Length: 268
Ligand code: NDP
Image (tube, rainbow, N blue to C red; front, side):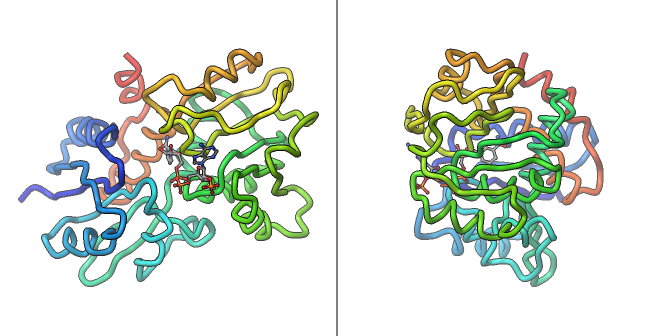
């Protein structure tokens, strides 16, 4: 019988995950299906439990449910525990296992695909939702100094508090960024969904800087801003999407797909 998987979010119609996983499955000869399912905003738990009871093997979780998914799990990977957010669920017997592959996906895209070395760099991370939480510890562990800026400062502060005493992770309001410069600016807000730009000052980018928008599939105001402001490399989040999907695929199927060729096909 074909093993069933899905990605759960709201909204979800824009998701490229079904296409990516079908390419992985074809490439590796896995008998599986993968669909996009929109969950009502107040019905995430019911949606997940229904899929599990119907015999699905696992799910990806996206905006805005990653924190709820974390609370639903019986067992967690280290990365999910660090992030307190889950993007990959595995249904095993009566248990729900939770992992977070966003950080590994982002790091693989930045270091491997974009050839940008992270060690000792200074990053500005915009946003303090599930995506930001998922990449914070992996960035920190890669030796990156991080300023987290968010519309709701308290959420950024909560994330930064986990690194108290490290001297390398701080929370700031957007209006405190004027005059600061970074090697790497990552947009982990969902502002692109509403075609908006977080209120960023001029001259944020150091020479050689990388501007990275986690959003993919459209030319966002952040990508336009980064080009206008002279960021050396400007990238959307398609590579992260493919790389985090490859990690999830490996967790589910115990087979590593060739992410590079899938990314090249998606870009083409
Ligand atoms: P959440 O809903 O958990 O968090 C959204 C964040 O965006 C919050 O920090 C919120 O601020 C901020 N935000 C929303 N609108 C605006 C705005 N107009 N101006 C400034 N800030 C804003 O979402 P996620 O963290 O799960 O996802 C964020 C984005 O990252 C999405 O676009 C998602 O598609 C993308 N993503 C891409 C991945 C990839 O593989 N490429 C993987 C994961 C995510 P506040 O707290 O003040 O409300």
